[in-house]
Length: 355
Image (cartoon, rainbow, N blue to C red; front, side, top):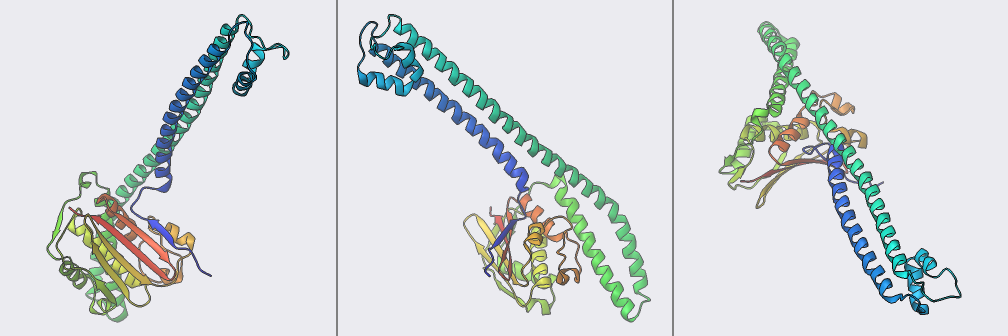
């Protein structure tokens, strides 16, 4: 059975908050269109009843065509002017009747306009309330994370020192386990530092990274961060061109390293990495083959501390922070990070702004 392609943007605002804000502005636009339409209706009524006033002469008979036109446009006005079906002569006060009927229709339009404006404006306020409530909740979450990262730094440093002390006297499997534990602690400490930095208000402006050769820079990153065995699984297609990007270099290194590391860790076979340099954008694509994620797991991918319950994921080390941080960094750099779950391939697409 063919399964549809899934897509998730990790660098955007939450769908609920973004939709609430979009709905609020849409309702404002609808209110403006409603007022414009009602003004057209009022203008049309004035022209229409002036025409009736000019055509209906007191004491004179009206034609069948005019009577039909009046009935089609305002049946109540036709009954007021000609209450007796056998008498087609207009009454002496026909002008006053038409003017009174026009004033009544104007009031009806005003009532309708007021009702719909109040209804739509109430909906506008409701969606704004939802949007700002979500923003406030996100802010409280970030403050909680900052406090947690601050409290975790000291225990992690103490644990790392304790393990380093034990490592000197350990032998065999114990030393291997301590070395692996130290590696996990160091990675967790780095993730915690990145959490604090990406949430820091004082560092929200991205700086310019100038690369004389994108291919050479990326090749150095791979040599620094990955073993020879891991690099043999990578198929890279990165142009050797100069590029200036609106992102800090250390943040760019973190994102590309994390995406590549995840692909190597959970992929089956080779990992394809390509880059395309456009006029205003740089697009990095990291694609790997592996088991297709369930829809429920894919929708949560990139959420804070989420890791898929699948055995092939749980059996490998990780914290559920990497993709979340990559999405935050891409958003701060005014770029985007999008995941595609396509058949048996998981594709990460990072788009960054050029100078």
